[in-house]
Amino acid sequence: MEFIDIRLLAVFDEIYKTRSVTAAAQALALGQPAVSVALSKLRHTLGDPLFVRTSSGMEPTPFGEGLVRPVRSVLDALETVLGHRDDFDPATSQRTFRICMTDISQLVLLPKLWQTLRVQAPGIQIEIVPLSRDTARLLESGEADLALGLVPQLEAGFYQQLLFRQYFVCMASADHPRITDQLSLQQFEAEDHVVISSSGSAPLIIENEISRQGITRRIALEIPNFLGAAFLVEHTDLLITVPKLLGEMLQGRGAFRIYPVPFPLPQYDVKQHWHERYHHEPGLRWLRQMISELLSE
Image 1 (tube, rainbow, N blue to C red):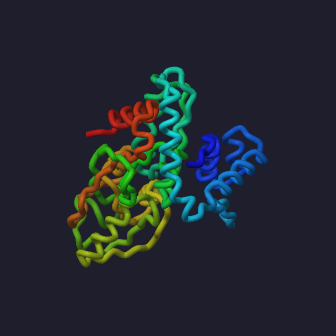
Image 2: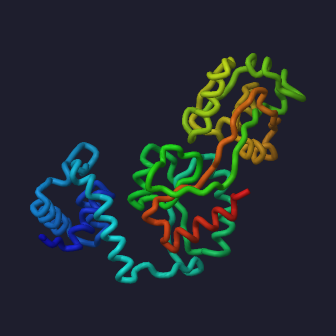
Image 3: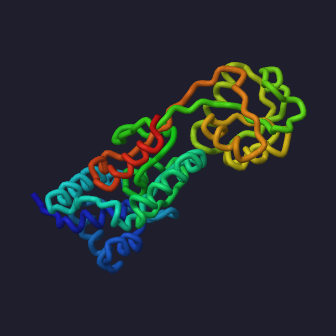
């Protein structure tokens, strides 16, 4: 059996995460020539190019893709053996956590999270990344620590924890000329609506149910996030359908009225998701516990 220097596996893992020899060298505090030599040795030993240059960076070959999980298992096991998994002290940590979330999750979580961090962990920083098709890869590679929201595309290899259940409401301006005390289905179909083009899975739930139930919705405006739409509604006669928690938060910050949706819409679960590789990592366990306490029902 031929032996492989463990440092070569670390180079492989970093190139996979960064899709760049240069970025991998920076992350590993090595010179770029040293990383190129390490990659060359791996290619020779394993008999495969492992990575090929493309317009989007160094992409893995099928054989290289198949090595990702085994290589990371070896690196994780070695880290455990060598005792690198130190206890996490939030009071003294200078760590940056990267969290994927929708604009709604930002409104609901970030104020509470920031207040808690200032007291318990003043040196910790938070970086927010939008949920996207790349979320699963970011969590698996460790480039992101958590994903918050409705993320049905995360499958095998991921843990999840329920934070709260969301319902939908309709919002209209407090000065709406035709809608006052209640909103009927006839009024819903007669008015113009603003809709969200991309902000997690909530807009898709609404769209699918409207189509399934044969309800008419006159879409007059489409914009990319809920926050902008809500304040647009305040100054127009447009309607918008939003998650209830967001509607309740915004109601006291603008001239809005909230109405029950005049047809059945399913609730959905908002969860936090993380990859199994980091299930036992002390810092992430602390972060997940804190978020659970802040948001769980």
